[in-house]
Amino acid sequence: MKNDDLLVILNALVEPVFLVSAKRQITLANSAAEELFGESQIGKDFVYAIRNPDALKCIEAVLQGQAAAEAVISLPVPVRATYKLSSVHLEGGDGVQAEAVVSLHDISHVLEAEQMRSDFVANVSHELRSPLTALSGGIETLKGAAKNDPAARERFLDIMEREASRMTRLIGDLLSLSRVEVNEHVRPSERVNVLAVVEKVVDALETQSKAEKKPIKLQSSKGDWNVPGDQDQLTQIFQNLIDNALKYSRENSKVMVSLTRRDKVVGMTGPALVVEVKDQGEGIPAEHIPRLTERFYRVDDSRSREKGGTGLGLAIVKHILNRHRGRLLIESEKGKGSTFIVCLPLDAAVQ
Ligand SMILES: Nc1ncnc2c1ncn2[C@@H]1O[C@H](COP(=O)(O)OP(=O)(O)OP(=O)(O)O)[C@@H](O)[C@H]1O
Ligand SMILES: [Mg+2]
Image (cartoon, rainbow, N blue to C red; front, side, top):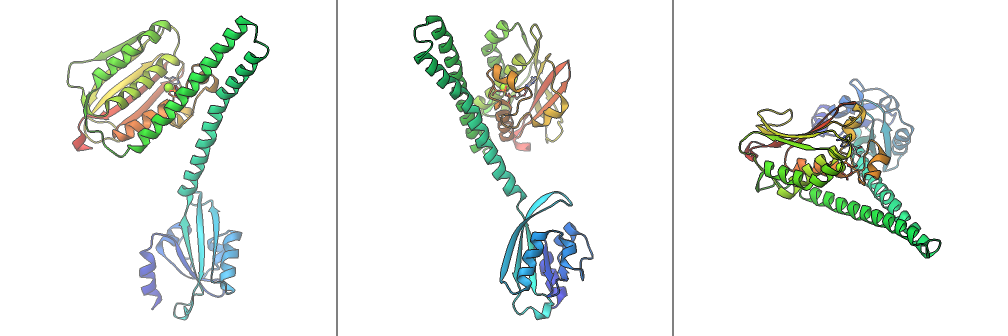
């Protein structure tokens, strides 16, 4: 087979492939390799194409007769990525002037997923450990120092009750998150009246709103507020957003919830129902906004914990919106407040 014919085949592969001669010269590079490492690699020493000591060791081993060798290498350009480099000795490859075939497989996303999984386990363990420590501490005190002290006993029982309910909430949120993830790819089939859902959530939060002196104002014009959706999940979205607005705003400030329709929303095709939840809190610094929907991400860790938050609320909101093919936009101005904007497609057929 001629080099040209071979190149046609190698160019059809999505992964970068090099052929390397016995003198370590590159004799052929497919278009994926040229795209990644630049054109005109032919004739150059392989060392100059991939500047990495492990890659070099790998290729040397194969050129000296080893059947195959592998290495995991990180390359900083053009974007930082990690590859599995495989080098295979070419038997009877005289016609193509090559002694070895080197291919690269991008494994960055696999490593990222592994990292996310282990971060998640570490986060969950950490989140569970603090209420557990408080509970064990409480039990120890009740058995010892506070045994015959009714006032101290009451105080510790209160703390233990709070910590136990924190664990219950955390586990409830984790289960909820995994349930949402499981059916994220199944489109909801009911039709749900979003105004009715929001009204119910506002009613349910009435006591909290009164206690914190933060009235909730709901605004909507007349109209059809039905969208294809899952009623319980939509309830969860507004429950968290309005609860956040109440939790993270000043006393005597208002929480405004409004429903409107928009013909066009960035990133969505077709008209959308837009629900805005606006508070008059201290706002969220811009650098935090893109990370708010990450699991356990909190702007002010101690404040959120003190309010009983698990830091999973917005992660759940994001996954529910993914399932509904909707979007969450966050706008915030320091000192003035934040607005969380939920956009839901009005028509399932267009999406
Ligand atoms: N309206 C808001 N104003 C200011 N900060 C907010 C607002 N909403 C959310 N945040 C910040 O985003 C973080 C993540 O919110 P999220 O709803 O995911 O978690 P949480 O409210 O702390 O816990 P949970 O919702 O599980 O009770 C919060 O800890 C808070 O720092
Ligand atoms: Mg929340």
